[in-house]
Amino acid sequence: MEKSFFRWISVSARAACWILALVTVLQVGCQKGVRMGRDSMNFSVDTVRFDTVMHSQMSSMRRVALRNDGVESRYVERIWLKGSRADAFSLTVDGLPHNEFRGGTIAAGDSLIMVLMMYTTEYELDKFERLDVEVVVEGDAGKNVLPIRGWNAGWSKLDSVIDSEEVVPAGGIRYVSEVSKVRVGGKLVLEAGATLIFGNGALLQIEGSFETRGDVGSRVSLLPQRMEPYYMRKPGQWQGIVVDKGSRGLYLSHTDVRGAVNGVVVQGAPVSGDSVCIKDSRILYSSQDGLRLVGVREAKVVGTILGQNYRHGVALHGSKIELVHCTICTESMSPQVQMGEGLWLDDGEGSASAEVVNSIIWGERKEEVGQAGGGGPRGRLRAVGSVLKVSQEHLSGVQMEGCTSEDPVLELRAQGQYLPGKRSSARHLGVKMDGYAFDLFGVERGRDTPDAGAVACR
Image (tube, rainbow, N blue to C red; front, top):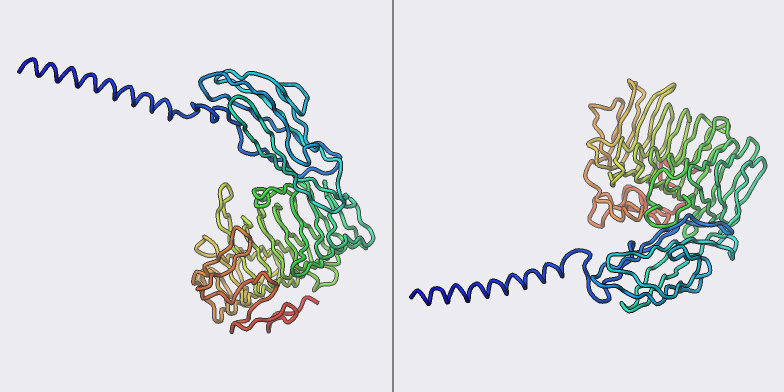
């Protein structure tokens, strides 16, 4: 009995040792950074991305490490750039300025440092060109490939001072590096498909007049310089459009304004009074207000989306506005947080009022319409056939006809469209991005036939 017991102990101990050894091998194999064979060589990033680079300019540097995460040394036979536009990039490997590296050993746990830059010389005017190139590493661990993404832009700079009429032709691209000012008597016109690209902190200042002539399928764009999708959704990269008091007005048609601090600011009543009109447009990803009106007697916004503007979608300071078939919606998206209501009314030095027709004002807040100041008996908000979050207890002078606070179930938000879902009770309200809108009864109205109550911009 005693021998059987010790024999059982001995067999169990040997089995336990084998199990322990197997577990140890599995643990080593699963440790992060410890790989065998082909997977032992790894880049420090998945993709090298460059900002948009204008012709004849050099980008900032991108530093990439090629790591040997294995347990033995690896021989690198060749490092080279592959692609039809490889000549637009420069590659430095371990301080050697050569676009092709030959021969070198990387010890286990060590790295090879590569520095990449983008330099564009050949370009076609008024054209964006995406450059797709690869860094290829060949050696005894096999082949490793690192994608490179960059944008080459062939464009001219917009004049810093415009004192007559300047027209950016259809499909034209112009770059604003700092401030471009349209002086009194001057006029800036962007034809269908034209694009203005703004450098960091750049500003378009209007003392004269500004007009865009976009159309369905050929929109006008005012965008930040960086073309990567992440940056196209990043707020506060340029200062926005500022229309000064005494200007000849603002007219935007089928226009996208993205990534500004304030998308559009109108300061004071234009000379021609009824000359602030925005139709079939999108103002997206502003770090503060999408549209801010200060002392404007009358403004019309038709068929327009104001989305992801993190302080207010529309902010009225002593101003009056008519919103028809518009959608205002903001949700907190890390690291940005919604700070204020979608529609904000502040009397300031005058009376702020809004007429909202067939529109959607939605967001995360309990109330998406707010006010500052006392309000008066003249009425501050008149809403007809719209979806909005508003409390008549907290907002003075409210008139609501056929309105609801039911969730409109907005879809395609990441694409900047904010369309009510097919089962939404609000599917005939807000904006329809093909340039057409619906009235209260679901009847389609062409963009040239405004609904009752919606005054044509011209």
